Amino acid sequence: MDTENRPVLTGLIALVGVAVVIGLLGGLAIMVGVKATGIGDDSAASDEPSSSATFRLPKPSETSTETTPEETAGTTPGTEPSSEAPAAGISLSAAQQSVSPMQQIDLTGTYQGGEGAILQVQRMENGAWSDFPVTMSVSGGTFATYVQTSRTGPNQFRVVDTDSDVVSNEVTVTVG
Image 1 (cartoon, rainbow, N blue to C red):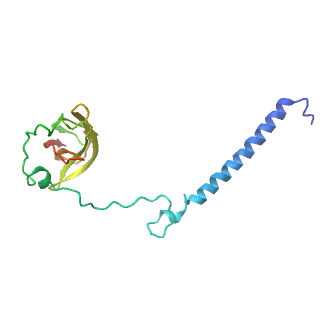
Image 2: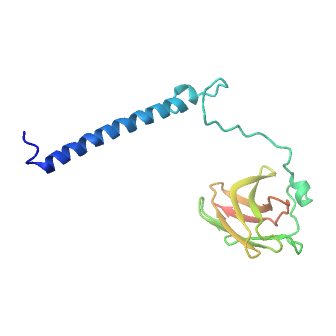
């Protein structure tokens, strides 16, 4: 075959050859990297401490820094705290009084003097406050977020400043 008379075909064959070599080298590099890190190794998926997993997160444990509602609100479970927040307190309100399961519940409020604070949403569960998986920050003295829940019946929510443990008033939204 006369390659001098067909330069386009020659260039195309050379390009395909280079692509195959680069692909083989890239695949080999990926295989070596996977083997070195242990990704995809069946033993890495076990819970045994002798496992050779490279990327392992520690299991969560209880901390002693958690506070009870009695420590933060000065009330016992089942009693209503004062809805009058001090000048530097957090005032919380819910836009909806009742919603369907998994319908959006808009929570808004003010926190004068709390600029930049991170607020943790909490829900009353079995007589104790539990963190709801929602946080928000205070900007301009105000905050807003929403939550969704499928737990039917009255749901009590509040927010807590994660740094100072200042607690808002409670709001109740009926789901169902």
